[in-house]
Length: 115
Length: 114
Image 1 (cartoon, each protein chain N blue to C red):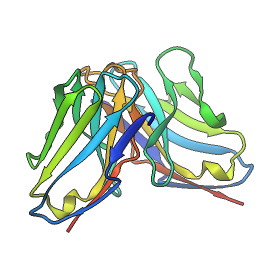
Image 2: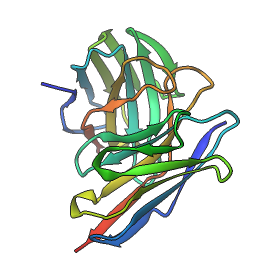
Image 3: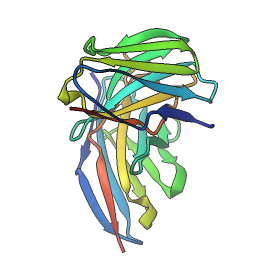
C-alpha cells in the first residue's frame, strides 16, 4: 500500500524567508508524487509533479521539490515566501495498484506567511 | 466557463432531504472524480468515472449515488445524509486515469447536514 505523511500541520514563515514543507512517502513501487495548493474557498491546484524523470522538479509560483529515494522524501521548497503563498498544501502519491487515477493525499500543511 | 465548475457552492440540507451536486468540466477530459474533504482528515476519493463508466467506488455509503451522463458532467445525488457527511465535496477531472495524469479540481461544494 502507498501512503504519504506530511510533517507539520502548520508552518509559519516570515515574508522573504525560505519555505520548506515536508512530505515523506511509502511505496513498494517507484512512486509518482504530486504537490497541490488550496487557497481559501477554492479547489486544489497542481503545483508540480514527479513522474520519474528529473529528481528536481520545478513548479509554478517559484516552488520546486526534490525527489530523494534514499530518504523517501519529496519536500517542497521556495526560496522566498510571499504573502500570497499563504494557503494549504497537500502532498499526494498516485495509487498504481488499480489504474484508476486514484490519488492518496497527506493531511495537508497550512502555510502562514507573516509580514 | 473554463476549467471545472461546481454548483451549488454552498448547500444546507436536512437529514431527510434529497439534493444533487453538479460538476461540469470544460477541458475535454475523459475521467472525472468525486472527493470528500473533511476537517482534520485527508482528502478521500469517493468515485471515479472513465468515459462515463464507474471504475472506482471507494466503499462509499449508498446514501451517496453518483451519475455520469456524459464525459463533461458528473452528479452526486444525496439522500438521507448524516451530520458527519458535512464536508467540502470536490470534483476533479483528468485526461486519462493513468497514474501520472494531472487532476484538475473544481472549487467544491460546501455541504452542511443539519
